[in-house]
Length: 91
Image (cartoon, rainbow, N blue to C red; front, side):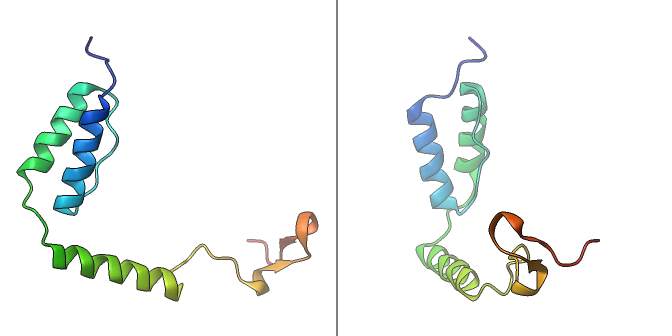
C-alpha cells in the first residue's frame, strides 16, 4: 500500500493550501507524498488577498507586454512559410 496514489481530497486540499499560501507544489505520486506536501503548506504563512491580487496583476501585465518572452519567434528569425519555413540564421 505504500505506492497508493493520492486521493482526490488530498489533491484538492493541496490546491487550496497552495492558493492560500501563494506557493506551488509538485503533484505527488503517493498518499504519503501528498501528506508531506500538505504538512509543508500548512506550516507556511498565508499570503494576504492583496498580495495575491498584486502578484496576479503583475503576471498578467508581463504576459500582456510580451517583452520578457524569450522564446517568442520574431519575423526576422524565420524565412519561408508553413512546412517550408526554416531558421534564417543557423548557429
